[in-house]
Length: 118
Image (tube, rainbow, N blue to C red; front, side):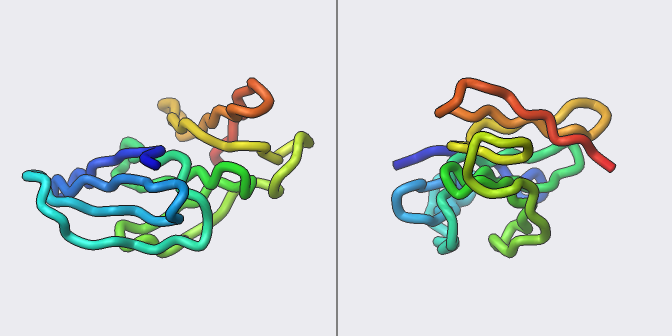
């Protein structure tokens, strides 16, 4: 169940988030299979920021991950699942503004959350 797509700016590889299988499937720029990266969390959105950093929304797991191109988690944002401050019911959709603030949509509670860069 594809729920995100991102392109690695350094080599053109395409990263496809497969939510139900908890994985990212990687293909080269011509569509040939490269590898599968198994994740421990749902893959509900993938986003590449202006610096080439990969981000992943974990859907119902309530966090946003900063990950490297091999799927290793470099950092996490979010206070887990829920409706409170810093929580997500189903984090999805990611975008960053020019100041480095990350925005994510929550499809279950119809809201957008701004995560302020520090």
